[in-house]
Amino acid sequence: MSTVQDLRHPTALSTDADVVLRPLDVKDAEITGGFWLDRQAVNRDSSIPDGLRRLHESGVIDNFRTVATGSGEARGPIFADSDVYKWLEAAAWEYGRQPDERLLAEQLEITRIVAAAQEPDGYLDTVVQLRRGVRYSDPAHDHELYCAGHLFQAAVAQRRATGRTELLDVAMRLADHLVREFGPGGRPHVEGHPVVEMGLVELYRETGRDDYLQLASRFVEERGHGLLHEQDPSLDLTYFSDRVPVRETRSPEGHAVRAVYLAAGAADVAAETRDRDLVDALAEQYTGMTTAKQYVTGGLGARWEGEAFGDPYELPPDRAYAETCAAIGAAQWAWRMLLSTGEARYADQIERMLLNAMLPGVSLGGQEFFYVNTLHLRADASPDTERSAANGRRPWFDVACCPPNVMRTVASIAGYVATGSDDGLQLHQYATGRFAGRGLSIEVQTGYPFDGTVDIAVHEAREGATLALRVPEWAAGATLDGRSIEPGAYALVDRPLHPGDRVALQLPMRARLTEADDRVDAVRGAVAIERGPLVYALEQVDQPEGVVLDDLRLKGPLEMAEVPGPGLVEGDIALRFEAVQIGRGGAPDRGVTATAVPYFEWANRGVGPMRVWMPRV
Ligand code: FUB
Ligand code: ZN
Image (cartoon, rainbow, N blue to C red):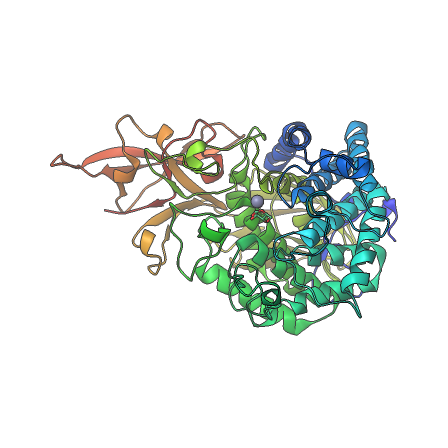
């Protein structure tokens, strides 16, 4: 087992894993300033404490107490335990980032409450314990392994970030129970909602217990053969990712969060079992997703019905579902693909999804959340459901999967910035911070995501250690120490590095127009405005009096001026340009000056009409 001196980030791999890149230790990756530090401060001071209050209020922490005392009813959805576990994971990563005795005491208190609900044989799922009493009786819907997977991830985080093993003890007792039930000699089992695969592999990495890895592998392979139909022939196998085996899936389908969690877990299994065929199959599936099933924001899931991926090119902006959790799960998948392949496209994807699909899911104050991330809100949109964007972000949801998912991701975001390989260090994301490993220790200063200047100071350098920097696919004209470098790949600093050296990366942040794929009927002929890593949106509040967003058209050639943004985050930049408002009812067209702001900032000044895709004249 690791020691507390040897803290590791999510996806710390075993030494046997077959990967190109390896995550850094927690102590070696730290965000120290700038954009992401501000987000982490809001997460610590606002989201995490408020989240704990909401979990108490909604009764889902009481469910554990109720099991322990033996009297009372379960509250919340069938998977209520998972929200508590995701909060515990967030609290652990946050403690590892910035130790705080109160936060430690809170998580240990919740851990004690969780532990008290565990059955003597290791079983734990409070809602099933309280509501059904019968285990594994409805695997399609009961989420027992989904809750287990989130418990395992939280336990590993607690062990790595605080050095405490209390939650790990609970997790191992449950994992041992799962091995007895579903491992060698046990019955085949497909659970309706993946995530246990990732959790079991993490538990294997933390404990060295090979049976956990084998069980994860078994769960990956058992899926996609229609086992759920033995339970109920009327089930929609697509929804549950049980129609096509993982190795044969060419494009994700069905419930988006389930599909991407499964793929991420399969990628973990592939790395640890050294299965390159599985990595290749997952790479093909990933391409299927980015080619035809992903919004420009990186958002995933075109259908409210079944919270699902649509068919290829079915990507309506105004009915986008794009659940916040789906972007988080896909970023986890992309991270694992990056480790296995070293391909820059996966780091590009992480950047797009974290900034434009996860971050819009939380208000800039940290206490309100979007579950659904639309790309277009019309005037007079009806706030017909709790999740409708017309309601604005909500403080919490009956199904509260997204808020604690954002919390754990923001708290652990330093882990996605850099990796090490045998040769040296690789920077995948740009954030002010300190990163070290494989003979190099560097300090990064940047005004990213608004400013494309990245200054790197070398503090320590072993002889021969290399530094590789991702050049985003959008960064045409990028330079490294004044030399031109190719976008969509890694640029190597082409000189020996010594302590005291400085490296200068310049990523041009010009605003650009992205054409919609003409197979997406709903936005054919329209363009999205992007600048650097950020997708922009037009929000009503920024437009002159009388502008009707749905009547605005862009006319080219377009000159976009950079102006100060709404000031909701430090250094934000808005884009201003001339557009045309179509005259209706015989009125003439008229020119207007329009303004676009970063999409992640939208709906922080009240909620009103907004659109990402703009038609042209
Ligand atoms: O089923 C558990 C979670 O609830 C899913 O991941 C979300 O999509 C929501 O349905
Ligand atoms: Zn969610």
